Each structure stands twice: as structure tokens, then as C-alpha cells.
Length: 220
Image 1 (cartoon, helix red, strand yellow):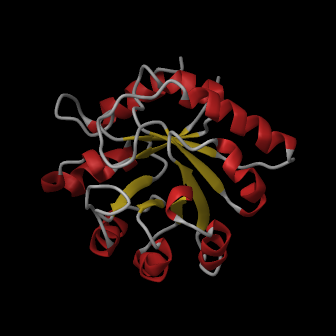
Image 2 (spheres, rainbow, N blue to C red):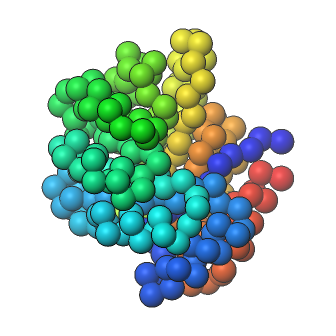
């Protein structure tokens, strides 16, 4: 049976219940916590920064997966690592000289990750695969939760998976956007091994544990 790691995104969490929801996610089998950092420039929304990263770090032993939807992400590397980041993802589209950004990120003891927007061909990052620890395929437009999964993302995952194998590498593919019990199986079958889920985990209609269970059971 195919397996995947699950990183619930606190973008959909109830912040009045954040302590309880993160504890429930950890108890019920989450593999990491995904924190979206948006700057109001690269994407329209403004979200979390260093105080939230510190707060979540104090609430959980799970790895913190920081997704930087920001321009000039290198300006925050040091403070995010100090706050507790375990992995940092930068966007291909936000880094005019991606290689230089990755070199800067490589100065810190975190996993180096690169995200691609839906309209960006995966071929754009084939030449840097050997220096990253993970690739994130956005299966919705970045900047807002609750969007529907873009079906064309599956072909991108498959193409990327084949290229990683052809280069003799072992790089996890993460998928973020529209992940729910209807899309999980296809994403994993296409080559994804880490899934980010927001409203499919943090939702007023069911518990966090039920959300995680629904995603896991969708592979059965």
C-alpha cells in the first residue's frame, strides 16, 4: 500500500484552539506542521511570521515546515531558523537568482526546499534538483486556503518524479493545495510522498483526528 507523510497546514486552524488542535494533530499521526508565511506582495494575503513559528514550536515536537510565499525570503532565514524552522521552502517565482537563494539557505541547518506555482513548468528546476532536499508542487494558486485541486498538477508530479529517478536522486515531492479524501490517492499514485492539508484536517465539521483518519483511509 502506498504511504505518505502528512503536514497539516495551520492556515485553516482555529487560532482560539490552536494548542488543542496542534496537540490533536500530533497525537493522531501528523508528520509535521506546515506554516504558510505570506507577505502581501508575492501573494495578496499577509499571514504568519516569527512569533507564530515560536509559538507552534513550543506546542509540538513535530518538524516545522515553513512555506515562504514571500519576496526576498533570504531576509528571514536566520530568524525563522532561530524560531524553530526545520525546513524552509522558497518559491522559484520569488527568487530571481534561485541558486544564490539556495546557497544562502544552505548556511543554515534546515532542509532546503523549492516550490513551483501551478503555471510554472517543472522543467525549470531540473538543473537544481541535486542541491535541494524537497520539491513542493502547488496544486492551487498560492495565497489562499480552500481552493480546488488543479488536475494538471498530477502530470507535473509524474514528470518530476521521473526526472528525479533519472538523475539517480531521492528527493521527496510535496503537494500543497486542494488535498482531501478525493485527491489524496491520485497525488500519491503520481509520485507525491508528502501532502499538505488544511481544511481537510482543521474543519468545524469534524475533529482533527477524523480529518487525518479520512485522509489516511483514502488510500485503502
